[in-house]
Image 1 (cartoon, one colour):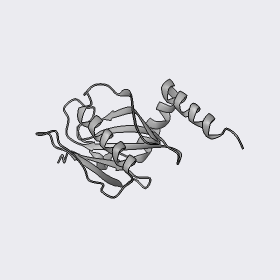
Image 2 (cartoon, one colour; image 1 turned 60 degrees about the horizontal axis):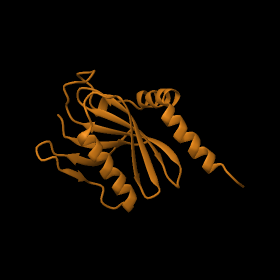
Image 3 (cartoon, one colour; image 1 turned 45 degrees about the vertical axis):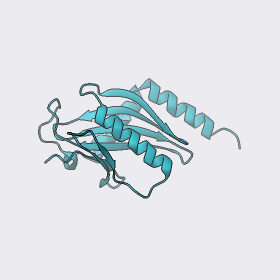
Image 4 (spheres, one colour; image 1 turned 90 degrees about the vertical axis):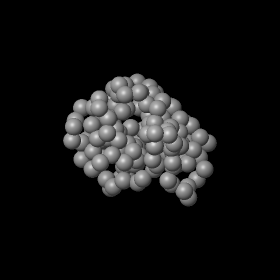
Length: 153
């Protein structure tokens, strides 16, 4: 059953509930309360992007920023019962990749049975690796970050 909930896949494969999107009103509710301001703003912007994303593009390059945090949404993974959004996040803390999963039934996806509980971390890792090899904008952002971080003594 679709809950219109957005989750973040954690390192151990479990899910952190980020927010919900109401289909009727378009209202977005970010459920993470006690978090740094800029991280909340990033999640609000990602929720808004997910709410408004078109139904057909898989390779995207949406940049979102707040404070020292910059995120690049670079890939959309589509299944019948959920949608995944791969994100590169860069901040003063470092660089990491994330996967947001939107638990909503859509009618233009590849698989009829896949929901968030069927999405495996190995598959997400393969999609990230493939994107890192084939996405020139992603390579440029990572290289620029590494140059700045590794500069100096």
